Each structure stands twice: as C-alpha cells, then as structure tokens.
Length: 265
Ligand code: SAM
Picture (cartoon, rainbow, N blue to C red):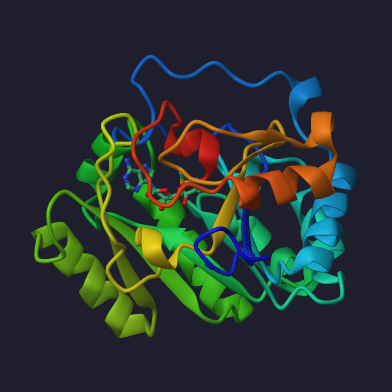
C-alpha cells in the first residue's frame, strides 16, 4: 500500500492489551488509566483476520505491543497463529520483559524470532522509581531467558531525557554491548504537545519515511501516533479500515490525545 505521499505502508503495530504491570512516569499518568472493557478488546480471531487482510494488502511486518503484551492471556497462541500466516516476513514484539523468564522459550517455540525489550536504567532503585514499583531483577532475568531461548536480534529500547550520553543510557549501552544486544535510544516524547524525535538507531519518528499503522487494543487503526484520526475495524471491517487509514495518513505528525500505553509506543 502506498499513501498520498508515496510512502510504502507495510508495518502494523498491534497493541494486544492496554494493561501494563509497570507505570512508567513518561508513559502513564500517576493516577493510572481507565482500562478498556473486555468486550471492546479485539479477540485473537479478529487480530489474525486483520493480519491476514493486511498481508493481502502488502503488510509484511507486524509488531505485538501493549500495554504489556505478555499480560494478555494465551499470548503464545496468538504468536503461533500469526507466525503461520504466509507472507508475513517479520514478526516481533516489544515488551518490558517482566514475564519473559517464564515465557521466552514458549514464545520462541511458537515462532517469534526477535524481541525489543525496554530498559532505561540498570540502577535498581531508579528503575523502581521510573516504573512506579517495577523490579529490575525480573527484567534482567527476562533478558537472560530471551538470550538463552535464542532470540535474534534482541534490541533494547532505552528512553532518554535528552541524549544517549546520559549516565543511565551509557550503562545500558555497555550492558548491551557486553551481551551482543543492539540498543536504540528513544528521546522522551509528548504526544499531547506534539514533541517527537527520530529514534537513534531505529527507524521511528521520521515522518517522511514513516511506513507504519498502529492498532489500538480496541480495534481502531491509527495512521499516526501524533494525530487523533482512527478507523474502526469493527465498524468498517479490517480491509476497509486498513485502506482508510492509509488513504488518510497525515503527511507529518502534529499532536494528539493518544497515549503511548494505549497505542503501543
Ligand atoms: N510494555 C511494553 C514495553 O514496555 O516495551 C510495550 C509498550 S511500551 C508503550 C512501548 C515503548 O514505548 C517502550 O519502549 C516505551 O519505553 C516507549 N514509550 C512509552 N512512553 C514513551 C514516551 N513518552 N516517549 C518515548 N517512548 C515512550
């Protein structure tokens, strides 16, 4: 699929849940968030049908995200279903790794080849503070389990305030280098104020090269993280929602009420 700016749109980021076990200060408001009612959440059948329709239209890359995707019940089954769809060249997941120690091997066996893991600091106290209660040890155990399970590549997503030269980011870089893990730096963004930057070491954040659509857990396709327009899969059907999102993809992001935890980052 090509949009009005001749950008090839072939990447679908699917938020499988808006629930998360962390409360990262830059992602969620302190008071928590209203949870999307269960009946509104796309079923696995609906997600699989969306991906099948997407592949027919030229989608060849899918990322599962959240909320925290590993909190969705039977996530391994969804991975197995998607991994078996012919024409899907690339399947990935972005996770905080808290549940990876138990799920890394089943996910790998189900056909997930690679992972992005969020890691902003190696300081246990700062991790707990930044995530409002998270436990760094769980994440580190999850990363080791992912390595042992043979995921390749494993990329670390490191959110920075200003630059990759910050002490926490340098520590994450050294940690990654020692283990052969790629590190990508994401400067803290603000959807509401329309503040966003290119990902250092990744492909996100550059509007002229944007190739993606986002699917919220309640089945709306958002052509842009920094724009409020969306197209409902349940109202329009998967195919038409995908086509409408591509047709109406903004040339560049501006600002929106969308939030990272809802849109999968
Ligand atoms: N729970 C999963 C995780 O932690 O990776 C997946 C969802 S999370 C919303 C996806 C990515 O968005 C994470 O790497 C997170 O660091 C990033 N993110 C969240 N809020 C952000 C913000 N305000 N600016 C930049 N990145 C952000």
